[in-house]
Image (tube, rainbow, N blue to C red; front, side, top):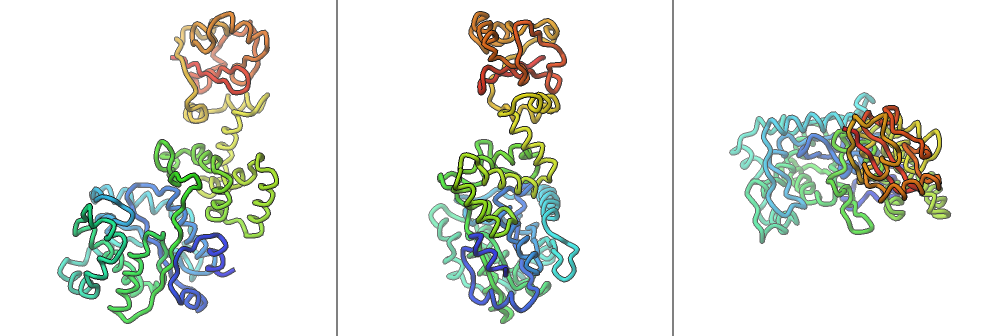
Length: 425
C-alpha cells in the first residue's frame, strides 16, 4: 500500500494539496511535522502525528520531526481562544530534551536513505535578526493573506498580539528552510494547522519559485462529545511519570465501541485485513470487548513496552480475578500501583500497633466503619462473603504484617464489588 492509500483507509486524511501522490511516486520524499515543546512530554493527541511519521517512514520516505525551540517561544495561536504564556529559554530547553527522547522511541534514525531526522528550528532562527526577517520573509506575504487565516479571524474580537499574529510567518519559514536545506517537499499536521502549513508552501512558491505540498489529519473527537486525550485529572501523557502505564492502559480500555473502531486504525500498526476481522469479531459479541483489549495492548506496548503492558493488564484484572492469581498479584503490587488500581475506594487508618492483634470483626466495623456493626460483620463472615486481600476469611482471622500490601495497606472486600482499604500508619 502507498502512504496515501494507508492513511486513507485508516481515516487519517482531512485535506491534501493536489500533486502529493505524484510527488511521492518520484522516490524517497522528505516530509516533516512540527511538535510544540510546551511541556517536557508529548500527550496522546501528539501520538496521531507520530503515527503519521511512522507510516511515512514505513512507506519508504524520510520523516523529519521538528521540535519548535523557536516557535515554542512565540506560541501557536491555532485553536487557542486567548494568548498563551511565553516560556523561558531554560523551560523550553528542558521540554525539548523530553520531547526529543520520546520521538526517538518511535522512528528509525539508522535506516539509510530514509533515516528519520530530528531538527530544532531554534538552530536557524537564532542567526536571524528582526530586520532581515521582515525584509526577506515578511515582504512575500500580504496582510490580507494573513488576516484570512482561521487562526487569526477567530481571535479578531478577543484580540491577538503581534507575536502570535506573526506565528504563521515563522512556521512558514520553517518549511522554507527545510525545503532549501533538507529538500523537504511535504509538511504534515493536524487540520488546525492547514493555514500555517499553506503559508509555508506559499512562501516557497513566492520566494523561491518552488513547489511544496501539504497533508492534514482530522482532529480526533470522541463519540460522546468529550475531548479526546483528556481525563478528569488532565492530559493523558506519553511520559510514564506524568501518566502511569496503568492509567494509560485504562484510558484505551474505557473507549466506547464507536471510538475503539476508529482508534484501532489510527493508533496501531495492525493491517487493514486484521483490523476488519477484529471489528467483525467484536461486533458479534461486544460484551467481550475484544476491540478495546487489542487496542489497549497495542498502544500500551507501543508507548511503554511489553513489560509495562503486562503489569498494567494484570493489575486491572485483579479487580475481577479470584484465587491464587489475584492473591499473588496483590502481594507483589507496589504502593503506587495499588492506589491507582483502587483509586476512589474508601479508606480508614489504623495504628501500626494493632497489627498482629486486630481481629477481622474490629477491622470490618469499629476500626473502619466499612460495615455498620459487629453483628453485620459476623453475619457476613458466616455467609463467607468477606475477603482480605482477595482471600476468603472466617471469624478467627487476625490482621498480621503478612497481610500488608506495600507495607501499609489491607484490602477488605464484601461480595464481588464492595471494597475498603485499611491504611496502617
